[in-house]
Length: 173
Image (cartoon, rainbow, N blue to C red; front, side):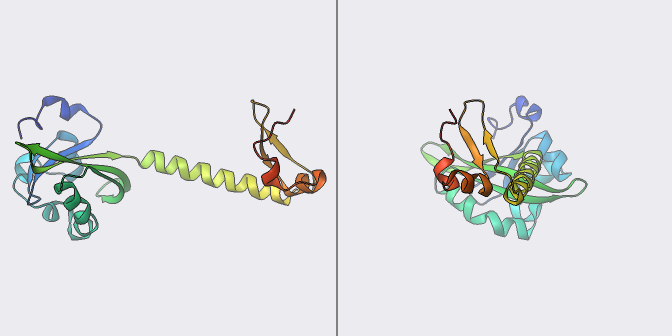
């Protein structure tokens, strides 16, 4: 547990905790305390289910068990935060090994909500562009800086007599 408690862990932009093989907390860093509203002293010895709730526990217990079997695990999760609302997390479970045996897990979670929201905006923008291109009566080719065709609308496919898949990623010169 001392190895978990290095002062640097309080200054990293991730939530770090250590649990034993029975999924009882041994340690959490300052960002984890701020996320849960509990201190390490409040959390130490409590079961993951008691701190994170039944629903979240039931969704991740299988992943944690694989971690306790010695397999590093990673998944994305959605967790409700009391003041920030729904947050997207990238959670890693790293087996904690002592004397060749798994004695628990390091749990490292990063809030990836901003990335997930940015990806959704990009997907929406791409869908709007595709919709406009598909509806356009004029032939449209999108050519990248490398002079390779990135996208072709149906009107351009008909104009050139090729399927769009035959033109995508072809040289425009």
